[in-house]
Image 1: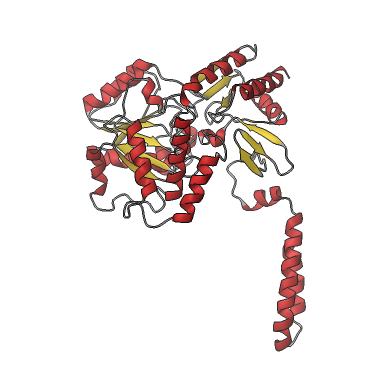
Image 2 (image 1 turned 180 degrees about the vertical axis):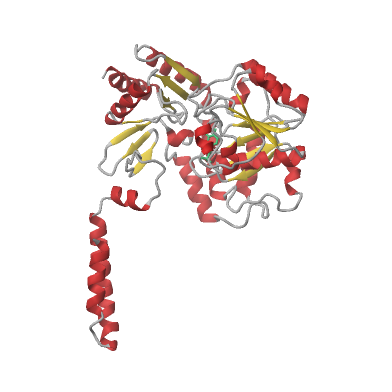
Length: 434
Ligand code: PMP
């Protein structure tokens, strides 16, 4: 519509002599713009979204959000949805937390991007790195900032190759580490990998929680990358002994152990990092999602000795936007909110409340997970799909998992209150009944 209107106007302008054309053209151009914006304002945003924003599936949820606050998303018409996804474990302190918003505004007014990562001293980066290291064991003392979870895993794998001078990498079935080619190479799904071959060579995939397969990690292995709790597999928790034996095997053969805590980090599983639960410390920890407090940020963290490899050759690993000062300011504010509002000690209790309410319904087979990273297992993909639609109709923004179609995800902001949990469980219960 828009293009045919502008075509007609262009033809008309072309009939006037030169001088008049320029005066008239200015007027017509103005008119043209007015008509164009009038037409555009009548094309629903949804159509423009489908036409101009590249899609990741043939059936996007397509919820138009006008604003978000706490655990709620609001449409332009004022309809309210409870966010049970948190942008996939990002909004751990809730949407638009005033303290995070203030930190973003303050930093944006001071300076935004200045220089490719690592050259200038930028206080938001330094302060966040320092804070993070106080939350981690002493061996994890050097933070390399990036912009996303995939990028964090890319950096971690490069670091492991560089340090060990080996190339083989080990990953686990149903693992998800990101969409870039290195991260995809260690995805635990053949369906995901096959479409983009060739990927990195020398990848070995083991079964999660299978101790018998650990001898397949050898002196040729540069690194083992693992989510301590597998998120997209449908929240699969590890046996404590599995992670400990994995740690020992890596140390025995000189392979580096990478824990991908992109989804589980920053309090999601009731401890600041999931690995704290299992008595196994990685050589490299990767972070993303909630780490930026709602802004794009990722990091891989290792010892100073390990990290020094990346500076040889100089600039062997660089990133323009990694550790963006506004993202770092938001990330630091989010950690401070978690501490000041004492969110983490409450998460385990909230989990119990939620799990008990869900398990009371006969359609629920199992509630898996730790903290507020839960999978409610319905045991049947079709039933899960049906339930999924019902939940959206009841104002519940829910999601499923990449590699588990029989369960739905519960990952609300950590500061959800008991009353809100009860209210949501009530709604979930009604949907399950239907
Ligand atoms: N690792 C894990 C465990 C994840 O869940 C994700 C994202 N779902 C990633 C890595 C990739 O993070 P990003 O999308 O920020 O690249």
